[in-house]
Length: 502
Image 1 (cartoon, one colour):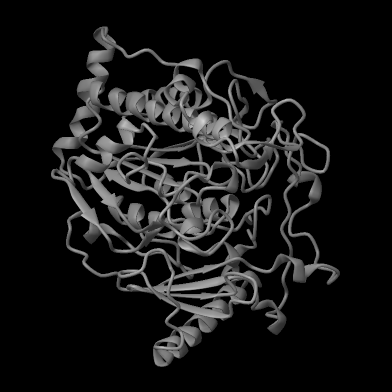
Image 2 (cartoon, rainbow, N blue to C red; image 1 turned 135 degrees about the horizontal axis):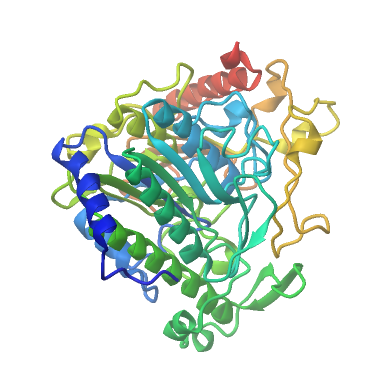
């Protein structure tokens, strides 16, 4: 874990003064740090009222910056959401249907956009939208990042990571601290070169299997006795296979990981303050999907990771940027990970990619001027099972899709991941299935959310627990939203054919 720097040498002071200069030019070209937790659900923060979790840094960010009370992951699982952050587009558009489905090389990422604006760009931690190795057409370098220390999937204590596509290396320490330390070194180099920076830090925590430092585990010693009768499935740290353990023991380890991640974010914030960079650095934290079954105790939301109910897609979301957000703000306007690219591109003075986007520029929200979202949000878990046996060609040579960085959890008997993507030549009328959602203002349409559920309509303003289906009470709203959802699906499938690249 990085120790807080108390003494600066002459060179450090000089760099701090140089780095502070952009803040004087107001907030027209901020530095950008994008942070994301892995499987970190909405309810799992102190500021959202969790009974046990200690997240003092995120709580401070929520109290001093912009707290996004209705922030959504672009998908109820990890790889698709990560694609939405990078592209501003729904993952069905480029075939990132589920975990271990890759992106496509033709996609334009937030790193491409900001590098064009003169930013230094770096990625640190979980990647999971393609292999990180050298030669992969989807490694962070190929997707716009100048440098990276990354993993194909998630990681635990003492992570094994690849630097700039090189052979995997073991790094001693708590994993969130490891990737934050690397991000800080990248920021130091970038400011030393006189460049604004984009640092993307995607933690491996708190994804299972769980582990923690003794100091963090001790904070939650009372939990095993509180949840003794519930067993939950998760990966064994010893065998890499699925086992069952008492929920209380599991929560103790999971919450220790979240607290360690929170502390690492604090290390980064402290560094930005010391270096004179905090004033004009946009720091954005969010989760990538809802809480999994292995970590779910109590929640006011319906569902969990993998579902289209609020518990599967609503996640923590906070933004700090003192130059633009000098006083605390809280918003219940719905926002989503697809909004990150168009928002950051606008702040950097860059046009968004000239292709269908699903996110919007949230600039007015940063000033408290957006009181209603001007466009709906769509979600879709594409029915991957329907592709079986249809003979789709691989989009990328499978050799290039083989990952190299090992992790504890085995898949098909191996500790690494193999990605896939397919060519999709034409829109097929059989491919509109799968759980899907349209979110428009307070109304939420859920189709195929659970077995036999059909179409469900909820008013989230009055019923965030999604306990009352209004489909029979508001047929006109239901019909209109179903038609809009179908039209959006057609657009997404048209993108999937590769039409956006021609």
